[in-house]
Image 1 (spheres, one colour):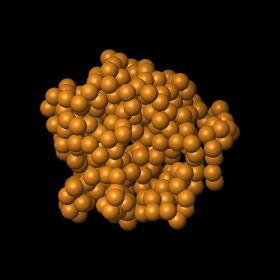
Image 2 (cartoon, helix red, strand yellow; image 1 turned 30 degrees about the horizontal axis):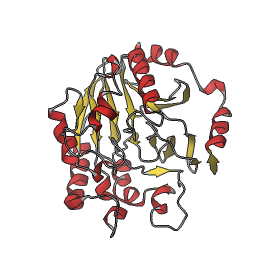
Image 3 (tube, rainbow, N blue to C red; image 1 turned 60 degrees about the horizontal axis):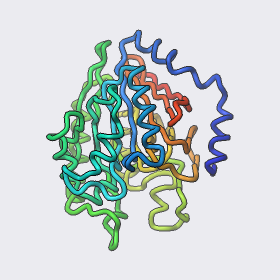
Length: 327
């Protein structure tokens, strides 16, 4: 099913007010159970343009209200071509001078997107040594967070661009260099780390969507359309079997410039790629929700559930996803 920007907004209006419980009430109930809270945003770095500044303001307000411990960036941190080095003015213009609220002076757990690969990706890693909040220790890595109720959340931050065939074709737009050779190593690391993990929750973070209803403006049959209609073929083949085998409940991604939720098998695939400029169309496909409003996702985890609340640049609550723990 295809929705234009206007149609998608109308679609959201049909979800029903009962589905949108006020954010304060949601967090108040969950906070009593000792929750870990954080934000997730992607595809943002445009020097404040295209609603980036407005999204940043709402992120700050939300982070303060829920006590967000950190922010996850799902990649495409700087448009259009990443950064040239650790002293590139883009750091100031698109990051330091945009996300200025005190509540956002928390760790930013970052991954790389395809636009970041058009610049100096090592500089984004090296900036971790210069910044008190920018945390990108390697192209892929993991970290564990502890909730007040004693539950744990194990995050696996991935580097998906080297997995995408299109970027290696002649004339491709992304300079991946030798990173493709490291894909088997990354996948083996992920599989083994998930096997060893004893965390209450396991969450994967990647830039590209695995499943999506979005086809963008690309004609079906074009080289890239197969990656944007129903999902990304390479990630369906390489990543999703690992997700299904380990029963990972949540995959966070960007790349598609919208806010979207897809349930496939028992996994939830959450797109938060609307940190600034958004696309013109939503192709719902398997999605039960898609918004073309710039925004982000507020997240909560405790022993009982994962909760995700989609918020837009005006502070509106668009959709709520609850994932109950099953084991």
